[in-house]
Amino acid sequence: AMVPKTNLVCLKADAILEWSRYSTEFEELDFIARGGFGQVFRARHKLDGELYAVKKIYLRYNNATGFMQSLTEVKMLAKLNHPNIVAYKAAWLEPIDPSQRSKHVFHNMNNHVIDSSSDKQDSSGGIVFETSDANESIISEVNDNLAIVKQKVSSDTISTWNSTPLPNCPQEWACLYIQMQLCHVTLRQWLDDRNHSFEPVKETHCLALFKKIVQGVEYIHSQGIVHHDIKPSNIFLSGDQQQVQVGDFGLACPLLAHNPEVAVIPSPSHFHRGQLGTKLYAAPEQLNGICTPKSDIFSLGIVLMELIQPFQTDMERSKVIGRLKTGNIPPELSDSFPTLVRVIKRCIYHSPGKRPTARELLELLEDEDNLNSARIIAEQHETIQRQEKEIRELKRLLSELSPSPTECFSPSSQFF
Image 1 (cartoon, rainbow, N blue to C red):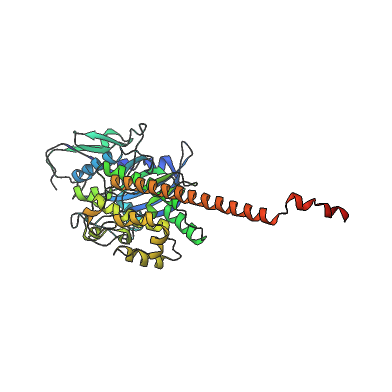
Image 2: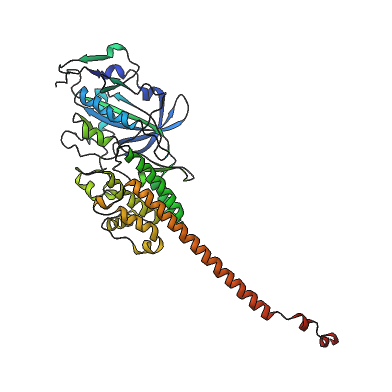
């Protein structure tokens, strides 16, 4: 393999593995979940004692060029900062020892590997993350447009080439670690708990949750990023539901789209070849491998429907969502939540051009919220008027039934 004329830097795995940031700084406690492109573990930071969620994504690269260029996307995503985005604390890469590939990659990911050079559209899931000012060891620039992971290694572990083959880096593996905030519960878990407890749906609460979700999506769209896998399990809530954050997006798609020399190892059952995102929540165009910001809006419409429509089984949920994607909304929803159903209809148009942008959706929600508030005020005023009328009628009946003072103290009554 030949590399461009630009000087490149290749990290030798055997030397860097002598100092693994993850094994040195974290105590891995237990497995949390498997996402679209990796696994998430609960880990305790040995220095501050706090608990974090750490996601591991396995990458394969053919040469230093593709590997390093992929980090450009990492730097861009690291700048994201919003209250409705999951707080990602740090990110770093560690090469995988060739002798440990089977243990780290194939065992964890069930031997399922996708080579980006064969199908760049084969992606889903992903990560967005932030870094703090203290994380100086994450990424440093090399030759203006390339980057490396800066670790505690000696100078003899770094070699440079100039238009020469890479005999020591024929096909390297690395693990991308994402240290992020440990969230309390996902929206999926919250919905399941609510549905199984038969708790009534509160429209104002659902609308408040949904607005915060849309605010997070609107922010990433403003940064030129498409989530492409919006669903309840990628939305996180605090214990009191006051904090709502969108997570698990943004990295895998850029990695494959811009770096033909990099392959990402996905979870086995997350998607079908040529499709982006989770099929049940994906917009029609996503099933053809096309994903735009309007695709996220379609998925948001499905999430809103789940907020106001309880389901007792996954099969019931799948059937209703399947019908919803063809424009069929349950009649009981239109009767019970006409305001939010209007929003859902705007989001699930088959044609992306007819769907609102995230900003327009926020404005629509604000308008509908104002209309809903006006309707509630009108209903309350009507209720007050009805109650006042009932009170007047009761007073009249009471006055008719009560004896007058003259009847109570008439002269004839004194003889008894």
